[in-house]
Image (tube, rainbow, N blue to C red; front, side):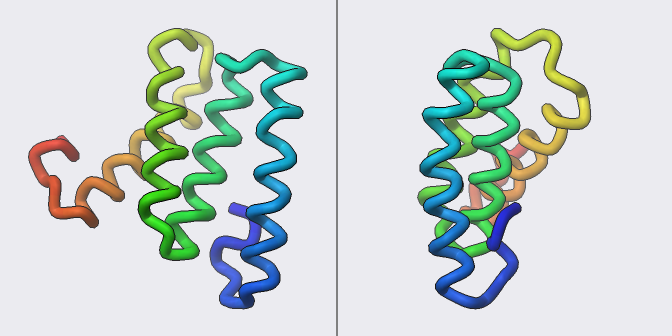
Length: 100
């Protein structure tokens, strides 16, 4: 994820701005319910997770998870990445029953 693992606030802020700029562009080019939007929201969620902003990460993962059922051609690796990070976030929150 862009800048997520970087401890410098400037790098994290730049990554947040880049994701904010990419969201509407990717949705406009590929459609609001597309594989590319799922991939972007997953990467953005990982950025927020790595930066310690669990609420923003949860929002990104929830957006991506809502799109998954309608995207039969999403690569299994991309779907698994999203499911892993959503699961990891639920475990961090102590929601063991929801992470299964």
